[in-house]
Image (tube, rainbow, N blue to C red):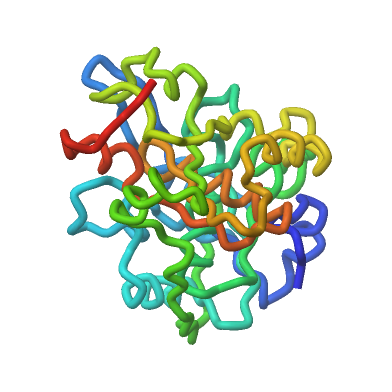
Length: 293
């Protein structure tokens, strides 16, 4: 098993013919408009050109709970397992996920749509799941092969999984974290969002006691991957997130960027970081839930 939560483009290129490797594209496009953020599936872009053997995993339709009040809410475990099987996933499969850019725009080099699906696979007990370092951008810049041919799984998978509740944080657990020094809350949004200096959310500020590590600061423009472990340790050590005695809960606006920080922490050995799935969308929905700037 690969120890890092990321695989390189060279590794994937060498393993394109490996029948045990399942490649998933998880692209979503998030655009600003006069009516607010516009979210669209990346399926049309995928159909035009994608990595050979890749299947399109639609985070909007396939891997979000349609009955939940917030977009991108994780599927219930049984539904996730059932859906993963349709992509040919077995317990022994190596799953590699990529996307075409960050939820925060091209200036950010984190593959947080891919990490969102990475987290859901881990939540349902699949450990051999990885994000492609540098994603589609790095793959195409290196002129590695692409195709418009649509791939279909040869057969339905037999993935069973086992739900890992420790990777999922609820609103109640976040409430507890505010007064519990053994739990660290990590806000993964920009410093401006953290301090309530933007109009990106209906209420301003962050959950009391939170540390701030912007997910864009823990991705690397040069490599399309991660900064060095030394740089990452310096960033996270000041927050206490590397203290093995502390439980870490990451959150953001809607549970996307938070999964990137969970992935980065996993690369440093903190593999049981929980993600607050509802994040600020859920927290701010309750007027009595406190915020500070």
